[in-house]
Length: 258
Figure 1 (tube, rainbow, N blue to C red):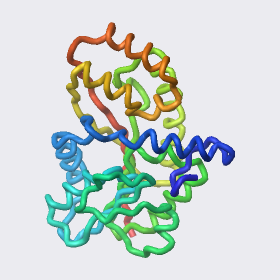
Figure 2: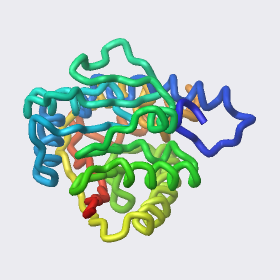
Figure 3: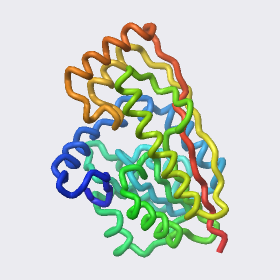
């Protein structure tokens, strides 16, 4: 358990967990995930699913640098700063959000606000099974009437993320786990809906190789330097100078009716 984000590796591996979280510090920095185009597309997608006003209260669990809700706050001129919770304190947190480096359950124990929108984007898999269930139940309670909880994770079938062989094996194991996670979450979120968000990525092979060196995705974290180097050789031979693919996410959307 690290600041409310639990990786199911056992308590005896706490130091390893901390190392993992620090290595993922740059996962969304200087990639398409932090680009203005991506953020605009993602926020437009959110607003199609949930109408928000300047009086809305919104919460991002696993907010990273807070750019998504920071931009959204400016777009709809929020009176209340969006709240963002993350276990890593980045140097460049968006100043348009109210950032909390805090255990998410501790946050909910002291903050009694209810929200119009709660976002959990590519974060839920960091929680163990029991913590996930606990978190979902709390989020349901903390929604206003007609408030929305929306959860995003990588698509679990036909995923297009460019991979070398070992990376693909690691990713597929994670996606298999995520598939089971989605099934269990839908059982907790009665009458929820499921769908997809797609963003077309165009990145140079050189840039993508730099991202691999930085271990931009969690399936790379446990690979050693030699494995990364060999993987980069595969990528160089498999892809042309520009790499194009769909970054696709599954989402579960739950609306509180009463």
